[in-house]
Length: 240
Image (tube, rainbow, N blue to C red; front, side, top):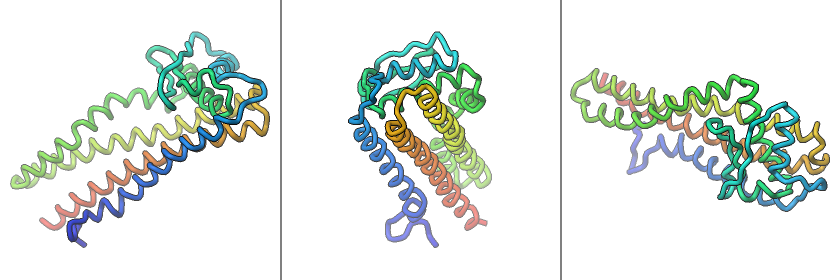
């Protein structure tokens, strides 16, 4: 079956588009879930920043600053400066959603402090994956331009696809890092009594919704890689 039929790229429609729709749904879902549980306030009235500090202390981690950052769901842990940055809706908020997100970011700080292997691996491959993602499409385009040169063209194209594949490697390494940070967060919330049993459900649903965005991003990267292999692998078979 041709990859372009009546102006449609069927490899995109069949492989990539469903994953992009999944990604859009996951993004909308995490926002709606966070908004919903931002209205469920904890009985203990702990703020996100206070909850994050409790997680750090419970794991014997010191020297990590907790700062406010502007934006919506812009929360992250910066290992270079050893700072947890919590968004406006999390830092001083006492909702179950805010506490779940804050404890998740504290979980990342604990991962670094305890030399959790996957997060160290992710940090190590970031420069390579960033460089590879920038080279991928230029190499593929060069391969197409040099198509008259046979094997040289194929080498450039497959080198470009390999560089693009590094983005999938990054996403695959990211998945266990994010799942583990959420597991640490929920465990700390339960063991530290930061939320009641009913309130914990709100935090868990918020973190589950966030985790689905990483699953969707991995699916998109895989689909795009398969699409490139289908297009250029098919072109080579037709030439042969």
